[in-house]
Length: 72
Image (cartoon, rainbow, N blue to C red; front, side):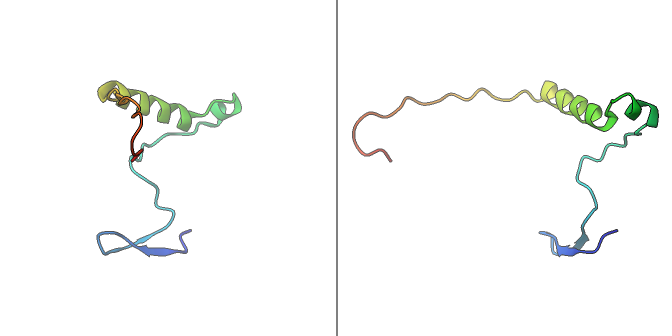
């Protein structure tokens, strides 16, 4: 039960315990949990892998290390 409120960046009130986006409904079936499975974790990992496939990270190119002079 929410017991704490805070002011959002948009200037409105919000309450704790609301969750974060993206909210993906996952049914934690008792039989899956009894088998040691974690449907919420599995769905979260699937979502993230799908997002990585759609938006692969850009390769980072490291510039050469400066030699001599001011290190800034």
